[in-house]
Length: 203
Image 1 (cartoon, rainbow, N blue to C red):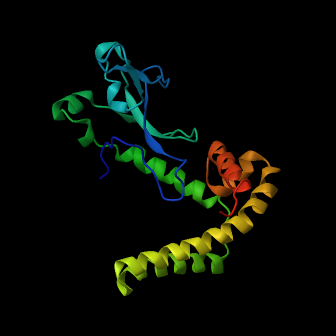
Image 2: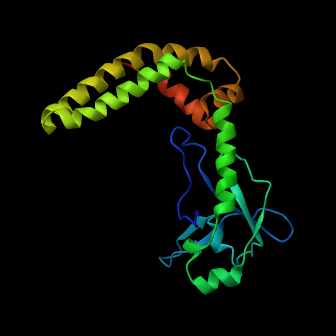
């Protein structure tokens, strides 16, 4: 079971596709973030955490929840919120949000399927590099292992600085949504990544 998490859902490699529980009002609309009075000189904080839409303090009352993603995706399946159960437990963190989470996971599976596939030999090599760097901890004292790990990272950065800018420059001229899909990112995250590699230099 996956229960109400107080932070967003993330999957390695797809950080810009952060997921969370979204809510719907009785009219089927998605409410705006609620304003929370922090009690410090009129300071307010915005939040879209589902448990704040309980109708108290003149806040909207959500009737159902669904999965949502930072990319704009919204789950098509909705789940009724039992506010009596939420109040009975007096802890929204134990309320079952498994449905929205699994729907978001299915969305991430779909995103992953549409990304560009690494050549098998390259994916294997990268896995071997990661595994070999991890094994250094077991083969040497801490100082020497760390020095070797950093030297390995330095070699990787040299490769990235050589091939990254050229690849980013080519992709910059392509359609933003196509690039984002290939990289498994939102368009904003993809633009940020391309800019990063375009201006990458070897220090």
